[in-house]
Image 1: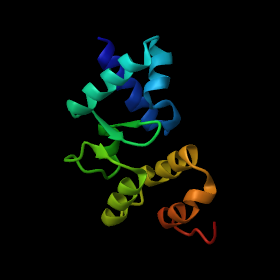
Image 2: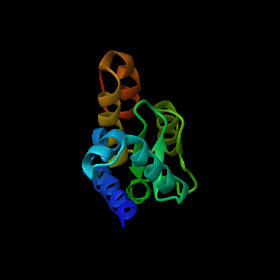
Image 3: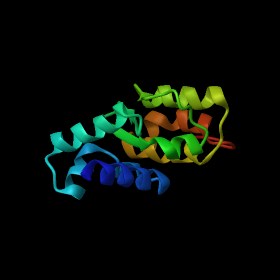
Image 4: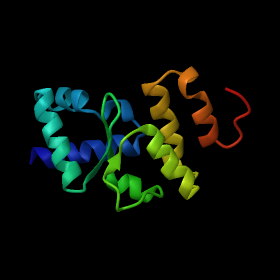
Amino acid sequence: MLINEIDDYIEKMSKNLSFKTSNAFEVSKKFKLKRNTASHYLNLLVHSKRLLKISTRPVIFIGREWFLNNGGNGELDGFQSLRDLHDFMKKNQKRTPLVKSLVMMLLYIKSWNNYGLLLCTLVKGCQQY
């Protein structure tokens, strides 16, 4: 079924730390769908607790299984911003592959100047930004 293929794709992209392809536009290209249809399927997967949603622009989806395996909390459905995700990880003091991949995601979405300080708080041993 197509929705299962989309779920598998997002999990695979999460495991490969390929967040730039974990959005509705890229899913629509991959599965030859309209972007709003891809978005609908992705949101269904969030509501069925198979994916997590980060409400950035573009909206990024993360595989729940991958998130849980990297120190995430099973009670969450997503985050309103990258800052919320950062605060969650900082509170839980997880320095896992999830944190490293968040750095990649932040670099993809915003420039280094805007998030340099945030990245330095995530990455152990950062001397300057």
